[in-house]
Image 1 (cartoon, rainbow, N blue to C red):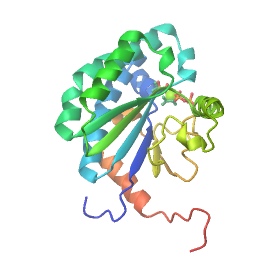
Image 2 (image 1 turned 60 degrees about the horizontal axis):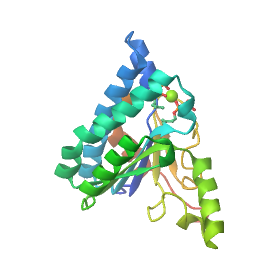
Image 3 (image 1 turned 135 degrees about the vertical axis):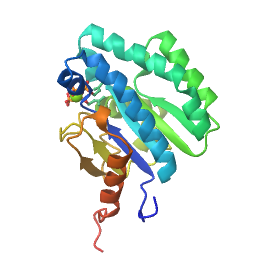
Image 4 (image 1 turned 45 degrees about the vertical axis):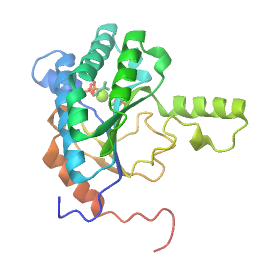
Length: 226
Ligand code: IPE
Ligand code: IPE
Ligand code: MG
């Protein structure tokens, strides 16, 4: 992508609109989630090509546990299948996989699969792809505060699940909703936001490139005077 003078180090996605995408086609919501995985793969491969170093995907929030049981189970199974099916995508592209969230709410089987993919891809150096599962920003701040108090620590950033990962430079949310929905509340303090009406299953490389061009045109001041 030669025309980009400023490539963000870390891009985060709130992948929204899978259910509406399916409904528009007269299908069950889960079909939208299946197709959404295709967008995740396309965006991961494009990110490596564009030179992005960290990419974050909000896959399931703490609040999403309140959805109908069939959808929740379908999403957890899809996560499990995707972990098994996409190992090659990670290895072929030199991508390291991380999963962040409230792991105590996930099944033992899923936790084992996550550990397996994290270990298998630990040597990936071109990019780190982070999936946020059973994550919410308030949960993260609460667990960080609790552990910091236990430890007698002083910097909350060391205790957030994202410790060691640079804050997102750019957040992209699909489906026309313009809210954070309890994603990384602390870490998004100075992030640039791009909102698009495109539903997540339709979000692919060309639109991603446009969002990066939009990012490159932004003037980030971080509260200072330039
Ligand atoms: C995003 O799509 C995926 C998850 C939150 C799991 P949605 O499932 O929220 O789709 P809409 O917003 O209902 O269309
Ligand atoms: C945000 O989408 C969470 C994820 C993408 C995982 P939601 O569909 O859950 O958000 P709301 O309910 O529209 O705010
Ligand atoms: Mg939604």
